[in-house]
Structures are given as C-alpha cells and as structure tokens.
Image (spheres, rainbow, N blue to C red):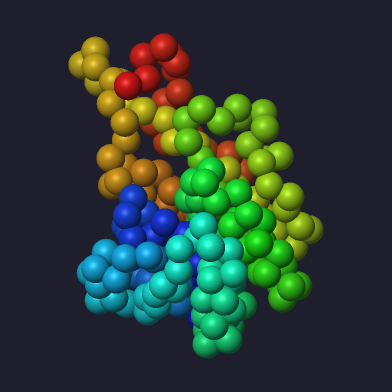
Length: 178
C-alpha cells in the first residue's frame, strides 16, 4: 500500500486527506490540533503526525515515526506557510533518503509568479514536482477566494492529471482579486 503525507490536511485539504484514504493510501497528516484531526480518523487509513510544522525537529521526528510504521512516502501534498521556511526542505531531504521515486504536490498562494514556482524548492532527482497555485473566483461580477472544498477538488484534480503546474480558480484579472 502506498503512503501519502499531507501537510495542511485537517483544514483546507481535509477532502484531499479523505480522498487519498479512499484511494487506498496510508495517509499521514501533519496536524497541530487533535480536535480538527478527529473527524478524519474515521476516513480510513489516516494517521496523525501531531506536530507544529514551524518546529522542524518535531515535524521530522513525527514523519520518521510514520515512515517506520507505514513505509516510504510516495506522495506529499504540502500547504506550508511562509512562517516555516525550513519545513518543506527538511521534509524533502528526509523523504529523499529512501531513494524511492515520489511525488510532491506543493500548494502555493495566488501571488506566486508561475515562472518561479518550480524554483521555489530544491527538488531532488527522485522527486516529481507539481506546483498548485491558488487563485480566486469571479462570479456575477464579484470576486471571492476559493472555498476549502474548491481547493481540495482542484488539488485532487492535479493529482489525478499529474499536471506539472495547476491553477485552481483564476489569477486574472489580478486587480479583481478579493
């Protein structure tokens, strides 16, 4: 059985966590809040990594335990905020130690320059990188940010299609963003 890691999987990516479990993955979910994790525990083979990803040592220790229990990680979905600049590089280094092929789906905010998405992280040869940029929705003349369900649906579609770069919603016209 494949092993997936979801960083941000109890909030806006909760539907992605559920979907991966439905697809037969062991799903390790980085979570700070046990209350937010509780509803996902009934979703299938879902396991918490109780850690604050801004604490890199705590994050890595939790992931090492999940790898020990469930095997190498084949898929990572990561929504890591800029307040944790060392988290994703540390996770990448750890997973790369297995020398197995794996995929990284990095979720990024709307202000990222698409030309530089792939350059956002140092990706090893064993990793297939996929950038997912979050946009916004324009409907009936009004703009709004994406809902958690729309974000999860877009991430699931990016995983299904294996697209190197995906945009959920729209990025234009930029001056119309909420």
